[in-house]
Image 1 (cartoon, one colour):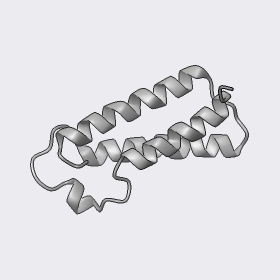
Image 2 (cartoon, rainbow, N blue to C red; image 1 turned 90 degrees about the horizontal axis):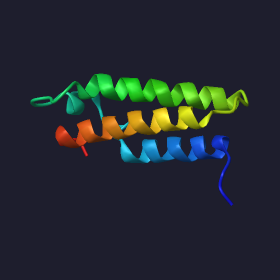
Image 3 (cartoon, helix red, strand yellow; image 1 turned 180 degrees about the vertical axis):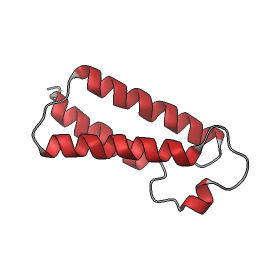
Image 4 (spheres, helix red, strand yellow; image 1 turned 135 degrees about the vertical axis):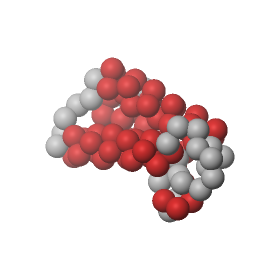
Length: 87
């Protein structure tokens, strides 16, 4: 049985948290030459994750578009982190 959009959003958020370096100190993220700004990208994805965690706590149901948007953002940030050798 497929999960509903709320369960899928919880799963997506957990995958994002596991795939990206949320616990990495700022001085390590900003070391060396940057492709894009990894610090700003991490701040952005962090705010998006916090936003959806808050909405889910308030029992708001995400749409498929919301899931798709967060997945797309997570993929782009992940790709940038790889380019910056942070993963």
